Amino acid sequence: MASVKLTNVVKTYDNNVTVVHGFNLDIADKEFVVFVGPSGCGKSTTLRMIAGLEDITGGTIEIDGKVVNDLQPKDRDIAMVFQNYALYPHMTVYDNIAFSLRLKKMPEDEIYERVNNAAEILGITEYLTRKPRALSGGQRQRVAIGRAMVRNSKVFLMDEPLSNLDAKLRNQMRAEIILLRQKLNTTFIYVTHDQTEAMTLGDRIVIMRDGYIEQVGTPTEVFEQPRNIFVAEFIGAPKMNMMKAHLNVADGESFVNPFGAKIPVRGEKSEELKAKKVASQDIILGVRPEHMILAEDDDASAIPVTLQVNEMMGSELHMHVLTEDGTPLIVRVPTISLSPERRQSLVAGAKLRVTFDSKVMHFFNTETQMNLIYGD
Image 1: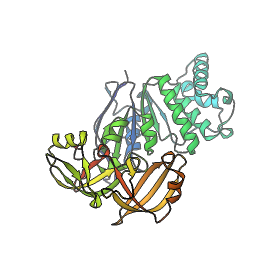
Image 2: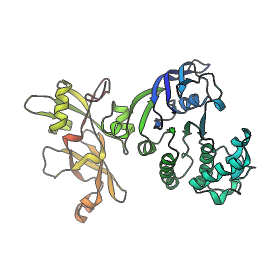
Image 3: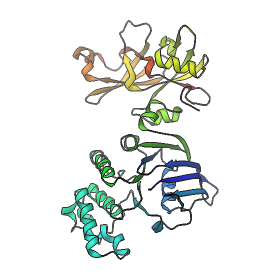
Image 4: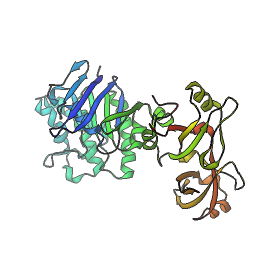
């Protein structure tokens, strides 16, 4: 069993700057948890406290039910993969991977077996005699992962391991980490600023801002049920559109009025508003770009906009539009849904109308920025 528990963990530096505030989280055995957030949110500091590379100012950290606050990193039974690989340039790949095992004075035959097993899983067997300088970035990262793998540790920690790779290699390495997780079947804690990595890798995602946890949930939960505007905008690319609107809640019909349009709220969303006893009020209305719909030009119930920029992304268009009051919105449209004539008409300055389905709307309080349905 390799559970990890953080209870009221705090990190304050000597200049009285607190970078992690009362962090509470239970990570189950064999769970893959991703810490995600913008630069400076405290995610790497939290990971380093779990590893023992940073002292904690307050609270407790438990690994496998044992408090490890005062244990050295080598005694915590963790393995860590760093952003910068941290390979020894004068050693071969084989010796880099074997290094920690030799420090433990493990028999050479066992070292040989572990190193070769890891190399085979990672597809780097043919590079075992090379030095790191003869490897690509992706190959070096595999060596760093292999060095952590051979330790057979209870917990696997990864601190932005793909951030130095180009986009194509990041996509490839993400898939390889998913396969690696299936083979190792151990507890993973992974830090990234990339929400795509978080969504594709994690069983659960911990979204952080300014040292606080904003939301913990599965990828589906944080995408479909964002707790507040920060989470809603951080998860998803391009980010969720936000617009001022008025929410009218009535027994007969509920609707929102963004930019003068009248869009009904029906079905599940209407029932959720009733269950939360949400009253009529001014709101911030959130709709993801992929849920925006190009309406007919004569649809008076839709929102009039002006096309500013049209980005061709291959399978879809990212249309940057402005409402009549200057609010910017992004509309994602599958190219296959557009006729050649319609596509040619989508030029800068074109007058369009957009709408969206009530099933995909999110309602946020204008002052607290909390989700009126899914917020606390």
